[in-house]
Length: 269
Image (cartoon, rainbow, N blue to C red; front, side):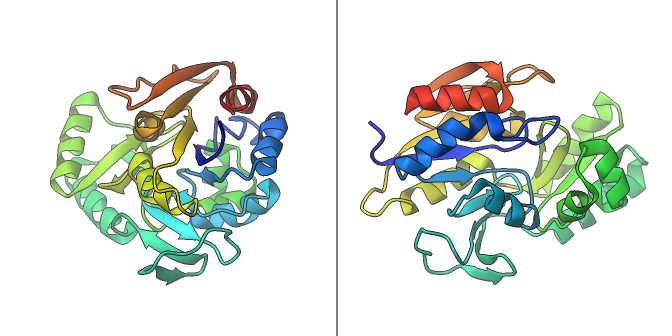
């Protein structure tokens, strides 16, 4: 049942508790993945810098997807062979699937100069402000600010301004993805397309593994929709996202956060 299976998971609010970032309630399912040698891929809005230490805590040896599908990182110690044509980075080898952050900042800052201060982005914040908004420790906030492909923002404008802003982004080849805490301005990419690129490269001799995806937010919808088994992790902080036209089955957990992640994944395995 679990042969040729790959798992793709969101972090905050899913594998990690929304409030304290603990993954302790998911220990049994994580051990099962390791015992059965099932690749499990972190597919997150977090940066590569944030995942260096977190991957060590999780004991995760696989490639990972960062900044809402903007790039796939193959770290030096990854147990999956690197495909050809990757770029070098401080984190290992990278497959970029979206334009860099500097292009995004140029576009949205020009728009804000014309329309006024209707949003605040990470580029406007220092580490203490990120701590305040996220609950991250100071060292975690510093890593969260090291973005390469996206700009998280807090929207403060009207609904009418939001529509104008969204239309402008689309015209520039960009988009806004709503996450658990922030709206992420990124290129034409998403967690689902990154999963689809990486999945055929994970298991030797298997180009179409059974994909299980787990997530709790709007920015997880593309990943959930493309999975064979999509698991919506229930949240105490927001309603479950809608997943239109899914390719496979969609499940909603009874429990929130990593406890729901654990029980749902064990049931599917």
